[in-house]
Amino acid sequence: MTAWNAFARDDGAWLIADTGGFHADGRVLRFQSKIVANKRLNLAITQAGRLETNAVVDIADWLDSQPDQRTALAGLPNLLRRLVAFDQEAQANGAAKSSGDHPEGIKLAVAAWNHESQKAAVVIVASTTDLGVPPFAPRRTKTVFSPTLSHKPWPGHSFEPCRHAQTLARLQRAERFHDDTCRVAGEMEAVRVGPRGIEWFTICKWPDRVGRKVAQRPSLASRALAKAEAVLCR
Image 1 (cartoon, rainbow, N blue to C red):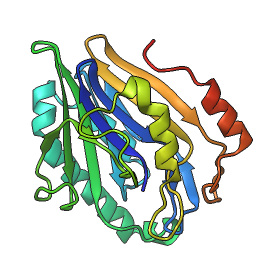
Image 2: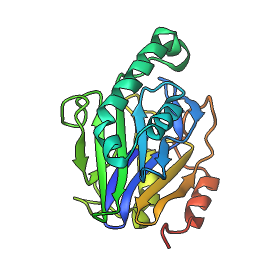
Image 3: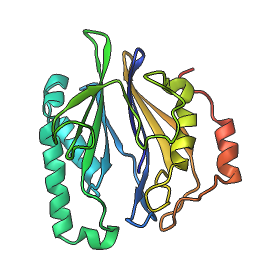
């Protein structure tokens, strides 16, 4: 239940993700950014699911090899198949013994800005049917929340990252996995791909530790930090 969010808005295409990786039992395995951005292509990718440790590097290398944005978007199914193959190889070499037997499936969300049309685009693709389309079939969308929230404070496409990102971070951190653990940890990062290029934001940070489960209640430090955080996009 790692945080995996994407939004196509007038001011750009947004990705919002946490940095926590987890063992199967909910203990924090590592902290690592899950967003990869490429200035030349003017797009960014975030990933979720059972990926091998070097997945971020694999994605970055793949983006560097793409000649332009259009080719990269068309090649997303091939990138996903490549990541699935890397995961299968890692599991065959014993990765599951150290990191836990996570459910299969990898999802990618891509945020892109087209300078010619002056429009944002979000494309999602998964190796399973989780997104409501066949495996490896790209789907364009305007709003994706994962984990989904128990209640819906932003119906339709009313979520605005600049105004609501901190609230989203707190709500998603409180959501519980099927085993009653929370799976949003580390930092919540946001990337906007827009007319000014690629911008990075740190929404909030939590005092999580490798080897421990996510605290069920926010600490005083994290609450104080949340109050001190400025609104994005001033």
